[in-house]
Image (cartoon, rainbow, N blue to C red; front, side, top):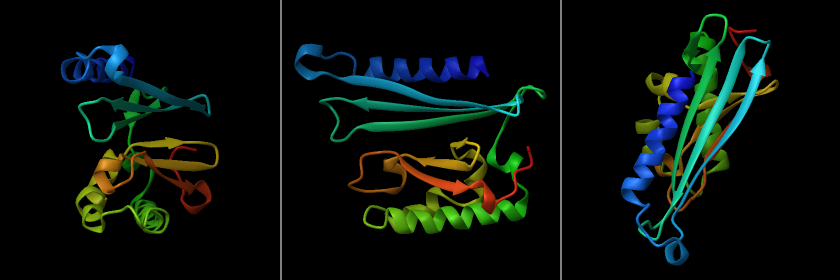
Length: 166
């Protein structure tokens, strides 16, 4: 997992340097910020989400990117949402997320984008973070919304679904 994280961060840094890092900082203040959230569960799983934020005088709005890792220490492998939920719970999760996106972000969501960006086939690639009580799903604003300039999050209570990891 360390190699994957290092590769992601280096790619983000290189992208920023190649596209936005050439301005005079005192005048234009281009900015790259990578934040993270980290948790360990049952002494076996590591949940990590990295959020990249880029702002530049060259951009009309900031660029966001989200990458997540859910790592099984014992099996030495990265797991995805589709690995930790059976088909029935994937459908429950999918429907809950769709309803919450339409409810919480109604004024910003481009409804045509939901089907293109978020569908059952793509559920396995969606960025997520697991806490003791919930799964948090992340969307970048450019993927689903217009006139919204922050990460979209949907928090799903663990009580609604059964994880295959506990």
